[in-house]
Image (cartoon, rainbow, N blue to C red; front, top):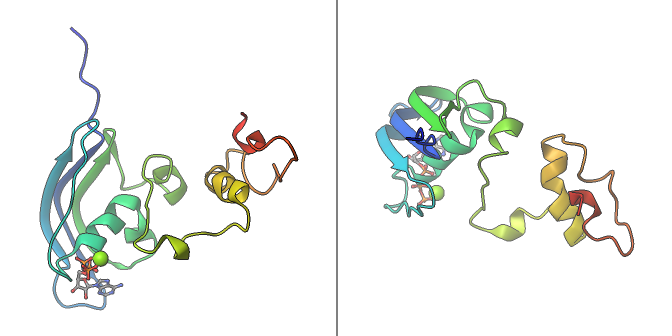
Length: 140
Ligand SMILES: Nc1ncnc2c1ncn2[C@@H]1O[C@H](COP(=O)(O)OP(=O)(O)OP(=O)(O)O)[C@@H](O)[C@H]1O
Ligand SMILES: [Mg+2]
């Protein structure tokens, strides 16, 4: 019998309160994502959807101050204690308005930006735009 792989995402009793607020934005959230599962998070404006996403992608606590309790595990690893670049190797975020997310002038710069962000040496801008080698930054 083989050991089961750790689940892609487990959120346990997660609560977060922005430091500027007197009440929590999210409280005691519990969810589990199975391999291959797609989950839609829906709710009224202000119910905390974005806040939960910020906790999963690391923007909370790295970019937003506040008090957090509970835990998040990605592939069995505690997100607490992981740096943003490490989290970004597991979690991608597509914003509501993709046009505000585009950083590169060229498609290739944009594709390579991810590798550059995690510092694996394969990405933007070192690879540059090599004519005839559009996949060079990806080692393709
Ligand atoms: N940067 C912030 N600083 C302080 N409070 C915030 C911040 N961002 C969100 N909040 C508050 O946290 C609560 C949850 O907001 P959040 O943006 O997570 O909700 P949402 O479900 O994503 O809303 P929407 O559907 O409008 O995008 C709200 O009361 C909101 O005012
Ligand atoms: Mg939102």
